[in-house]
Image (cartoon, rainbow, N blue to C red; front, side, top):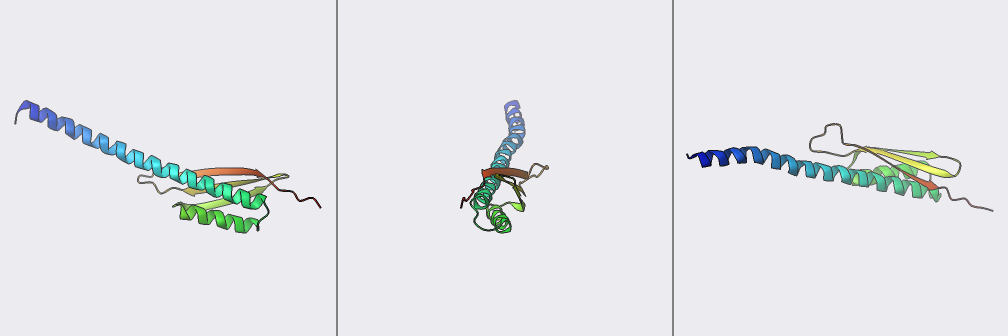
Length: 119
């Protein structure tokens, strides 16, 4: 084997792992961003349902858990906090990453004003 062949083999031996890390990192980032998006949409949907007075907080929380599970999240937790004129919803879940280094947890929240009905 010539020196040129050895140099090219060494270059490929170093380049292939780097390319694989870039590809897997891109996929992992996409899955994590998708998980954040799903959690955000679940929080917004629950906040809208509670703010508009459609059903109880428990029903809205169950809907948020279903949205998160349908989007691929696991361990979905939905907290509804009512204050004087607003509702704050916090959705915490886990995105299924390829190599989970503790970065798979996602937390999103939504705040909406409560609708008031005047007699």
